[in-house]
Image (cartoon, rainbow, N blue to C red; front, side):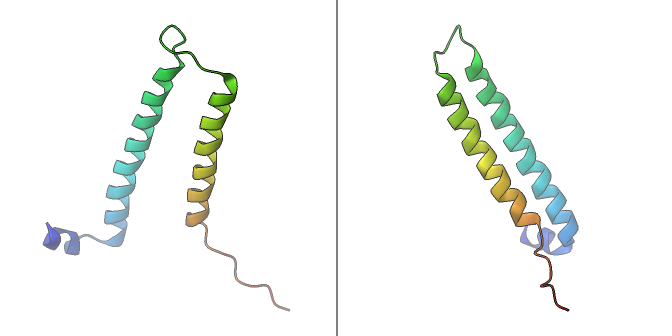
Length: 75
């Protein structure tokens, strides 16, 4: 397995891991959505806002990791 990873390019490794991890996140969000069923669960709107605030904060933090900082401006 280690030898196989050495033969993969950085792009190939990124695509493989990013795809798997993205699908994992999407599946977890789908499962979280099951909690919206009011016939099975009782929750307050504020609780839902807290959940999505935490998710959105982590999304923004993660997106920031993919942005390269601009070069410092100079005249």
